[in-house]
Length: 317
Image (cartoon, rainbow, N blue to C red):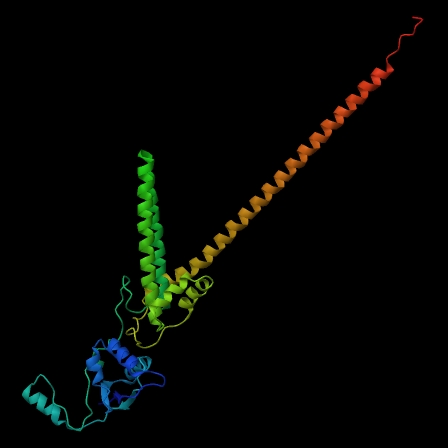
């Protein structure tokens, strides 16, 4: 071969702090195999998990095994000019290739490792990256707004004929929409946690006060594992549509903040003007009351003066 080829070799060693049971379960999940087949790899003898790999592919497989707690290594394939096993396979056309007794034993579990995971929104299995998480969340938000508008329109149409029926229909459809949004949001969030190598149960941290204000930011900022981990192969590369949707969502968030701040300032100014108007009206009413009282006192004083100025009939008259 003109290019150098490599293989992944494993002799049963584990990374420090990793238990044997945990590593076996991780490998079974990683290779989509049962634990009995994985047990055959822990004999202490070197096992070639994967052969004939390029250097980048070998690094990808090694990273996946490291994340699973396995201390594997990359070795160069030894080129051979003549292989008795290959000659026997070609001549007899056997279904199973013969192997040399001097070659290290091979395992078929590593051959089932896919390059990328399968994308599926409606599941808690699999992995998605940061941009795809943003894109799917934007689509979910738009779908929620459209469905909410349809439900509101239907409820209003029914309410014109029967207000009670319209209220019941709107409540039931609104409840169904809320449940659907929560379920899909959990599924998307769990897949994002899997991409980080975290358990999906950590999504419950969104129910913890204060933590729920920081935890979603971690899902948006922290990069996922570059290779395969215990939750499967890495997600596919981001398509152009994913990048566009993620960019729209990033632009939509500041726009929403600006709208919220603007509405809040308008509400504050309206409340302030209402308080000023009410204070002005109160002061006007008080001034009018004082003026009326002054006028009344003045009229009383004038009447008293007139009475005092009237002549008094003398006895002579």
